[in-house]
Image (cartoon, rainbow, N blue to C red; front, top):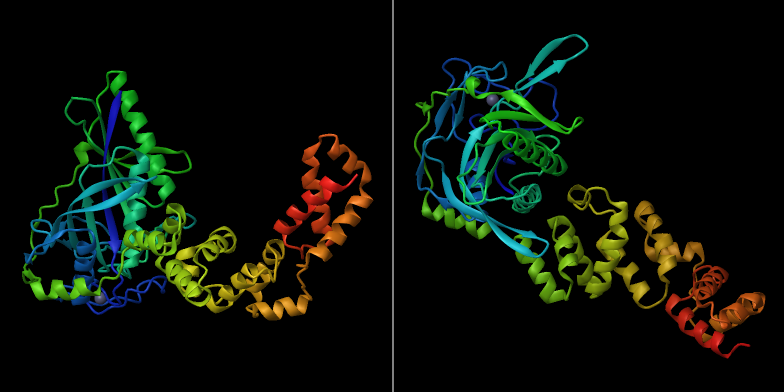
Length: 476
Ligand SMILES: [Zn+2]
């Protein structure tokens, strides 16, 4: 039986307006090579000036990841040639990172685990090569060149693909909560590399293999799973696992070699002579600390104690801070925490694809949704009717009362009215009533359905149930 050992390296783009060493914009998706200047194009003689906002964001991230912030750190050059790296080197922090020794706690179906963080360093991004298959030409876009990143390196503390994915999810959520990263894996503002090795219990760690550029939670799990299996097969057939860098092909679901050991690059790191030592003062750290709001885990725990929500509901509601804020705004109006959570999570979310972007400007205003829930609570509209009008509420942006008026919805709430309908249904279905009496109790659902149909969903289903049971008991 082999044990797997997994460590992650995550590159997260910091949400600054300008690049790390120049004042070019970091806007994504602009025409190629429009956000460039002599500094980020690596012109000879152009000098980098450190973006203070990037440092502040990096410190904020390091604090929520429980890291020790180094008062003094420095920048270094990582030398290699690549067409999208105009200077011929990348400015990073190699010898002394600004933050070390942290951890992030993950929650695996109720089981908590601390994943240690070895270091976090600040560095600049490279440009982007665009390969055009039709013309067989390669283009380079330097808009991304010099965009600020932090690289977060974990200890090899994860033991399964699921744990690795959960860590990445928690990290993404945490960085988004404090507004230092937008969490966009597809656009590459959050990128993940995984180091994977396997070994037998009580034996030393195996040789690790690095898998580069995993850009979805699903792929990270699949790639690591494939890699573990691949290494196990090799070891069991007497082969060796060599250190190498691999890529994951999601269409074939397999990893393949990108660089073998022989091709390992020697980056010839040396201190960056154009930048000063980075000093982060104690009072600056304190200032940044005071800006940090409640984090997802604390929020979820507060939701459970304050609003008496279940673990699952609290967890889901706090998965995005926009969704959590939206929820709290609604219940500030209607004071119905449980019912609001139910309807928000089980019904409204069905119409929302991405809670992180769509709840920045929610599909229905909190006031309107609060009123909608109130109407259900007061039984002015029934559950089925509420479900029916929800899409209109989202699409039309109309007030819930207007929709109810326009549709001529009236709820049937008096026992007498409902009983009349029930008696009619039983009268119309005498044969089924007899079979029900003979023991075919499954027919109860059929009667409920008939009554609801006759009332066009306007009767409270709970009431229908109770009254129907009574009526069937006394009917002959
Ligand atoms: Zn620039």
